[in-house]
Image (cartoon, rainbow, N blue to C red; front, side, top):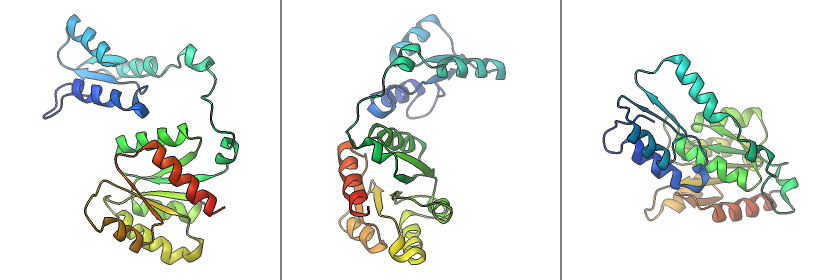
Length: 214
């Protein structure tokens, strides 16, 4: 993260990211043109794992990234968090996450891993259509508002191309206007999750539609 940014500076953004349970353990590196001992201490307290003074040299950047990504011995030795007895079957499902925002991608992917699922990523509707043409997915989590091709158009094309073979498509949207849910259903989506996504709600939706489509 860059330290000096309009509106929300790097330190404030870092603190907000660390408040998200799904991103709490994600390493953060601060880039700044100002370097003081007090600032380094402050950034460590904010949860930053690395600190680089601009202009940054490639060698320094590589070294810093390797350092913060180096697996921590305690984490490496720790057992995987306990999951429901049905976790083994969850790994047999292949999900497709269609989301253009990088932060939302990380949050959703982290939640899916926590729930025991694996997923591939598509960054817009057109990308999703290409991936569906080349792989079989058990379920699709579809963002509605995306560049290139939005989730509504992508869903309509998938339903038109695949008909009854279309995997369940669950809409993910921050829209809260009356009629939005109906718009999702009209496009061919089976269900609807509001952003910010709640992990328990996501869990329930996945169980419902994966079981129905088994």
